[in-house]
Length: 111
Length: 116
View 1: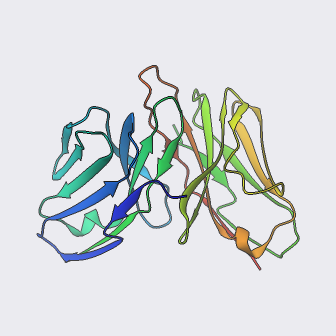
View 2: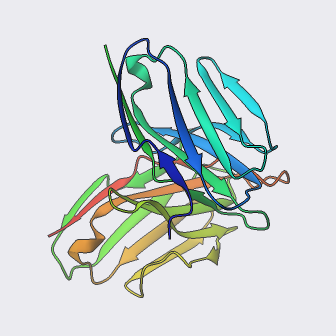
């Protein structure tokens, strides 16, 4: 059973556009992470959020954890071709050590 | 540090054959994870170890899969006998346990397995 749904599944945009990717669940999480994966490589951690309502920024990327800690969003401003990749959210339930990964959003930014 | 090392990078085998995937975690990390990634099912956790001891193997699909960690610097994932539906990319990841609850996993480059 997939506990984390990401939307959209696929996104193709022009360089310079803005976009938002969503990660949703009906469960409450103790922490949530976003990873980016490029072809032929393993996922690389971008950010971890742990507090409801928390907002973190990483250059042109803005990450938000929902107030109820059930959902998260990733916003990219002025997308660049280098942002192309598979974006994965991963969530950790309270009392467990492991992370469950979302379904993924495949982003392509055209020059 | 060289990061997490996996071998082989690509494996093509025939149905029924035994397959062994290898992983060397980052030195000093005390957790090791095995994942499988497919288009249909995404990235799934198979098993993870803490200090070389298996903690949770609930993601291992069936008895054909087994994993070992004989020491802190080496782990194997074995499939015997292999089946075409085992075709996937298998990732190994390691992390340093943290008292804060969350932790960063460092992934290897993966092994692409094709079973014909």
